[in-house]
View 1 (spheres, rainbow, N blue to C red):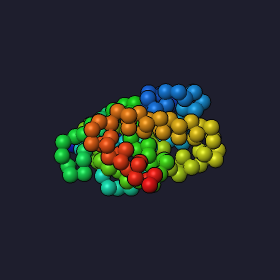
View 2 (view 1 turned 135 degrees about the horizontal axis):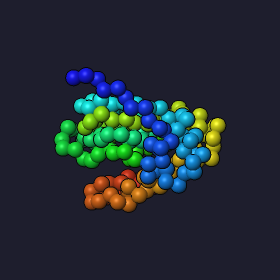
View 3 (view 1 turned 60 degrees about the vertical axis):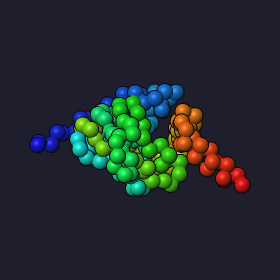
View 4 (view 1 turned 90 degrees about the horizontal axis):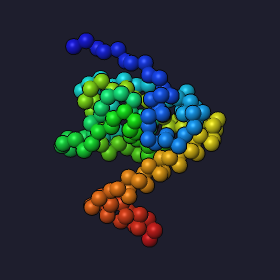
Length: 162
C-alpha cells in the first residue's frame, strides 16, 4: 500500500477546534501553534502504547485514534478531531495507561513537556492558562467518572491525606 503524504495543517485552526482551548484568545492559540509540532500516524500504527513514558499533550487534528487497554481488549474510547490526550504529561511524570491505535490516517499536534517548560518562561500567562485548562479538564473527567473508577480515585486521594 502506498504511503499517504501527511496533510499540512493550519495549526491555529486545528487548535481552535479543541474543547480544551475554548477560553483561549487568538493570541494564546497562536502561541501554542508556534510551538506545537505536527505528527502523522498512519492507519494501523500506534501513536503510543500503554506503559510507555508520556511526555506530551496531543491534540487530535484529523482522523481517529482508538484507545485500547493494556491487555489488548476492546476499545475504551476514541480521540477525534478537537479531542486531546496526554494532558497529565505536562503536569507530572507519568506513563500512558492506554494504547492509541490509528483507525485511519491521523494528524496530531503535539506539545512536549520541554516546550511547555519553555513556554512557562517565555509566555507565562499562556502557560498558566493551559495548566488551568488541563486541571479543569481533569476535574470534569473525574466528576463524570462512574462506579469503581471514581471510588478508586477518591480512595487514592484520601490515602494521601493520612
